[in-house]
Length: 206
Image (tube, rainbow, N blue to C red):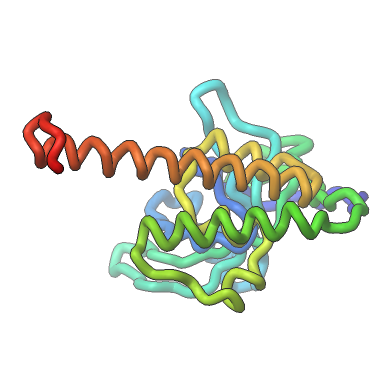
């Protein structure tokens, strides 16, 4: 277990970031301009925590700023951040000029990767990418991806992504992303059938 880190900059948002996910952000509030300025000056990460309807979740994702896309004349910033690792929010801190907290970075369980689960997840992900983009990804490209790497490229919705972020087992995450990929494939099948019925005006074409 890692040592808790104090005064960790926090960005409560209505989104969930995952490790390896690219996250474009528009920074316009003064407190967050201050926070991001500090992160840029010190090469320090910040944390994105999902502000859900029922409150702030207690597991978030640390992010590092990869690029400043644009600096506006009024101080606003467009940045590209990338998720790095999950953390638990132990306590919020209010005395700084920006939101912060005491966090503890979370490690996965010490277990061997289930190669069958990994292969199944890769295969289902390949099917989904091919169906959704009409581009079959290279085997070598997919082989480099873990559960986070695959999930970071698919919009599952906040609840599903938060569930992945809170799991401390790669094997459990592989099982979950496989189920999510299969559900997405079924939705694509449903959309295809609906569009076919619409084109046929409700009649089956032979």
